[in-house]
Length: 266
Image 1 (cartoon, rainbow, N blue to C red):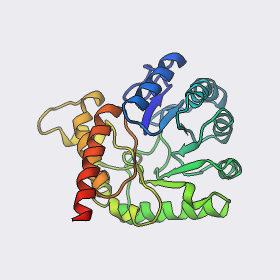
Image 2: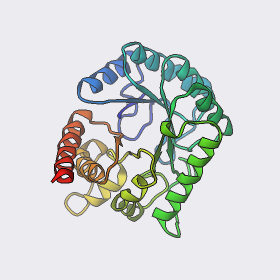
Image 3: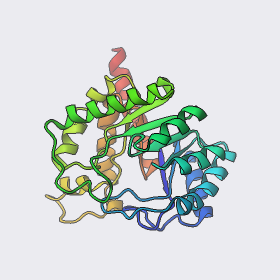
């Protein structure tokens, strides 16, 4: 799943793709590089991000979603707003990637009525507050319980179970230790029976892991660290990897998957 952020303030590529033509070209290039899905977002969910109005978000993403969909790309809309999701579904989006896991009750109806795929992600609090001292009794168990509850709610609302993916929300209201623990236990989420989506790409916890060898690592310099997490995720059975650098990660994922497949059949 390639990331196209039509935002001025996303942590890695904010401002790079505000121009719809630039964003569309980026999405098409990602498909050529190996992306199966292009995830389009118009509101940053980085820690401390400022909320965006429905009108502004729609204006940012609809032209991009429509153009990519017309070109035959499988498009996911990264939004927690039912009106934005509905507008994007209307121009071809086939997946809703909701960081609040259908936190707005109306979102479940929008997704159920349209029959789109849904990615349900765990996040503690909101983007503005999620990194304010996150605490869990047991981060793996707590996140798994939350996601199972949200998936059950989605099914009760009429969303096809086969259309649901779950995402443990790496970096969303978690410390470095929490993120590592979730990565070590990705099998727990795979065993829940839904396809698992994981997004570690260029995130801050990778910079913290790299601190012993370099004091500061800008997001764009974390692709090698991202690749390591992708290989681990694939080995654990994760099916969707959300990334910025599609060309690199497609190579990593395909190679890791070949190794896992060979091992499974030996």
